[in-house]
Amino acid sequence: MIAKYNAKISGTGHYVPDKIVNNFDLEKIVDTTDEWIRTRTGMFERHHASSDQASSDMAYEAAAKALDAAGIRAKDLGMIIVATVSGDHPFPSTACILQKRFGVKGFPAFDVSAGCTGWIYAANIAKQYIENDIAEHILVVGVELLSKLINWDDRSTNVLFGDGAGATVISRSEPKDISRFIDSELSADGSHYDLLMQPAGGSRTPASKESVEKNLHTVYMEGNKIFKHAVKSMYHVCDLVLKRNHLDVKSIDWLITHQANLRIIEALGKKLKIDQDKVIVNIEKYANTSSATIPIALDECIRNSKIRHGDIVLMASFGAGLTSGSLLMRL
Ligand code: UT7
Image (cartoon, rainbow, N blue to C red; front, side):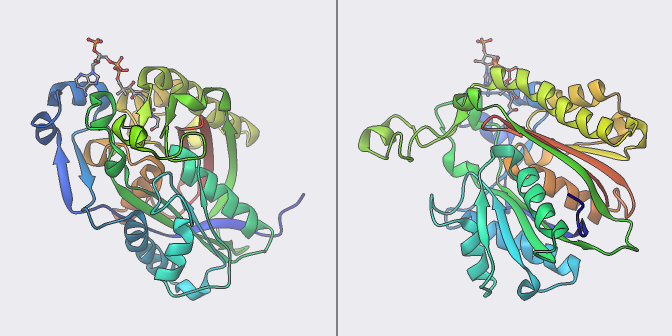
């Protein structure tokens, strides 16, 4: 089907909580070392939300900046999509809470659960609605507050995650505009769904005294098994969009990948044969903010003029599900 319009990113924003927890702070409460965290992951600092903050609070701050950058108001939106696995409540959606915070209504608002690939999934959904002329502006937010879902007895996960939100306004690209989504690819392999999950709190294992005592409402991850899938699946979705669009990797100005592990980011860059200077890395400052890593990195790079209007950007992510996805766009 021929799309009626193209979609583009018209504004970005991000928010991270004030409280910074670095590796030395973690050394005091977890059986870990700065050296282990740095060499195994590339992480140094992460931001943790305060006890009275919820995901929608962070999403609101990031979204307000993105709307401002896009030069539109919340009433101009035709849809809100929030990518999260750590929303304010299991239901209703954090997107509906965000809609209320902006004082608007009368258009769809929903969450997408695709783990760390959430923002790529949500941006892709928004792209379809824009291309088919169902909405003109869609707010897409990736937000996670995983510090409240951490198992402080499990050092293999508790040092890895940070809180934050990255927001984007996805809008119709006018014919004279060079900015547009070029292509995208989404995938999932549900056969490994149990490698990364929050085991309890859903209909399979509802909340009980036992589920709380066993820490089943926190992040469970078999990190080294996930690691093996990460590079392979992100490479696959990147390679597909490059080939489909007859693009050599040399024509890509920037690669923004999910920030879960510096070794994964570098290995993907190497496999794609992209110049390492074009690979965006901010994992040392924020650690793994799951669905927020890519929109946070994108906003940072746009605000400090590293990524400029007209640049070709390839994005790729990987996460719980196991999901994976890529997005190719001209900014
Ligand atoms: O964002 C969603 C997708 N997630 C990912 O992509 C995460 C992918 N996985 C990873 O990034 C890595 O697997 C981790 C960073 C999670 C772990 O690194 P690893 O090199 O795979 O370590 P490992 O789990 O194989 O553990 C190696 C050793 C173990 O000790 P022994 O058995 O070799 O003595 C662990 O007990 O490291 C130990 N270890 C730690 N040591 C100090 C695990 N966590 C820690 C820690 N501090 N925090």
